[in-house]
Length: 277
Image (cartoon, rainbow, N blue to C red; front, side):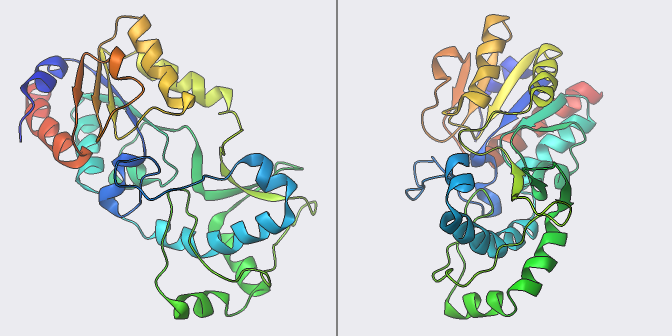
C-alpha cells in the first residue's frame, strides 16, 4: 500500500497528530463510529450523576472492562507515531482516546484530551486515586463478582473501558474515602467540557506544527473537530487517515480511506529517514 500524495504533503514538515478511536481498533478496542462498529450509546454525564441505578451498572461493568483495557498493548500505528516523534517528525499527539496506548508505545508529548481510564476523581472534593486502587476497594466490596461474571462468558469491552455484563443489581458502589462524595472515572463524558488547560496545550501543538495529521477519528465530536478547523483557518494543511467519511473531509488537503496502522507505518518508513538524516 502506498499513498504518494500523503507522503508528499507531509515530507519535510513538522506534524501535529490528532487521534481517535479508530487508532486503537487494531489493539482490540472497538470504535464507536467506525463502519463496522456495533450500535453504541456512550454514557452522558447527566446519566452518571443523576441515576443511582445507572451508576451502579456503570461501575459494575467498568470493574470488569478497565482490566482488559489496562492489559491492552499498543499496535503498529502507535509505535510508528512514537518512532516519528523520536525522529523529530511528530511534535506531539492530541488524542481523544482514554486508553493510554500512545504513552505505552513511547510517545512523550501526549495531550489526553478526554482524560484516561487509569485515574478516578471525586466530583465533590476533587480528590483523585488510581483506578487500580479503586479496583481493590471495589473487589473488597464485591468479592467474587469478577469470577462470576467471567464464568458466564467472554467479556466484550467498549472504548471507554466499559464491559458488557448481565446482572449488576447487587453490585456495591464505593464512594470517596476523603469526603464520601461521588467517584467518577477521570474521563470527559458526553455533556462535559474538556479542561481549558488541555485545550490550550492542544492548540499550542497545532500552532507549532507545519501540518495536522488526523488518524482514526470521524471528527463527529467538536472536541477534536475544533483543531481541524483551527488548522485550516491558519492555512496549516490537514491530512486525514480514517475508514469512512469524517466531518473534516471538506477541510482536508489529503484524505486517505484506510486503517491507521498500515498507513502510519508507511509514513514512519518514508518520513523518518529524511528528517533524521
